[in-house]
Image (cartoon, rainbow, N blue to C red; front, side, top):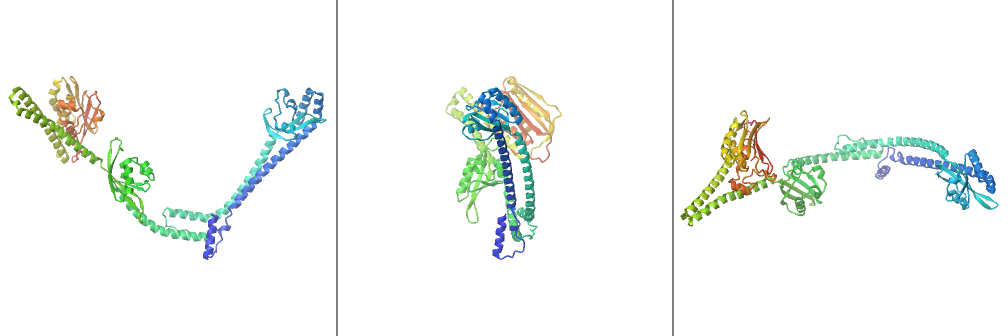
Length: 621
């Protein structure tokens, strides 16, 4: 910051701007606090180190003097080899001098000690002070004593008599008290240094605050400009450098205000168009990183716009075909079109998308990225697939009886008419196939009629009892059930009514009962139930037949779809019964559901609304 103000001052001088205000350079002395703190730290470190060194030196000198005082008597005891007397002498002398005294033989063996039993002490040849004396030097040693379990200072002197070394005399004293005293001194020094540091920081802070206050005001003003608020202007007061800077910022804010207003207006228009588009829109840069994606695109691709912005397309959207399409769109000079698929739905079904891509360029013609527009064509593709399947199924269903009729007719024309028994058999087959063909055509016409009436809302619904319709349907299917010794039971109270078309609803229940009879074994029980709930009326047809696998349940209401094609053909079904049921129920503004598993039977449930508002359109078919 100091460097910045210096540069501004020099700039004003070079430009000839008169300087009437006090210079900021002479008001800022940040180095003072640093120097003060450094001096305090150096003083603290040097003072504590000097005090400790002095105390250790004085303690070592005292230990050496005590050792020399008892050296004479020790040599006398050693000369007489009176170890017992030496031990007694050490205990009395050590207690009076508050000093631990130890005599060590030249081989390191402890001969006497004022505090411990020498026989229990280990060899001392490896002690630093002993090694130093044996080497001809005297070096004090400060360490933790395993014997005394506290920090001790040791000083050793040689024991010589007439040039012969008789051993080593060591004196030691605990330094715990000294450390405690030094700790108090250190604490006082540190507290004094902290007080001085706080005073220095306070003085430097007051000085810096006086200088930084106008800078803080300018900072707040700059932040206000950055947020787009250009109403208030900065005050042009204080030092010359601050006045010049405030004047420049005010001028910049005025220009930015005009430009931002234009940019915001244009951005709002583009964002409104971008967000309201039904198609998904993705923009990427030249590195294939996602710049933006609208809400429709996020919903189509099942992604979070906030999480994928700025990420590589390879990580953001895991679809290989879309990644290749974006790469090709960036490389192509002309717009591209293509399709890709993805399993983004919760049901695991594949969805199909149509994509249109074009490169983006800036005003200078440089490529800045690509724009990808995505449309969901899943419904269109599925309708096309259903149409193809329907045409193929109709062709197959019609071709079978037509081929059979044609083949047996040609057989009759080729001479089978002369054989009465064969001719009668062939004619019966032709009659059955013609009846099958007639049934298929009738079902197709019925299905078309229901669809058209529901779409045009021409179906007449009346508030009628449901029980009568169910009884009529059961009566129509009873002969076929009785042939296989089956029973059909009804559980429905007379009070249940609904807005229905009785003829069509009866046909739907008959189709469901007919399937139950066909696909249940001899002696089976079929149950028809009706109940009224809070907002709907339920009609259930349950059996204990062969059941339906989970992979087929979602498709059994498609035209000509058969779970077991061989069994269905053998039983004479047209493949349109459940499709007719579905459209009749939808024409009643209801829906049909299935619960089934192989070998455990099926439960078909018709859901009819308890009340149907007039003018309510049918559900999509």
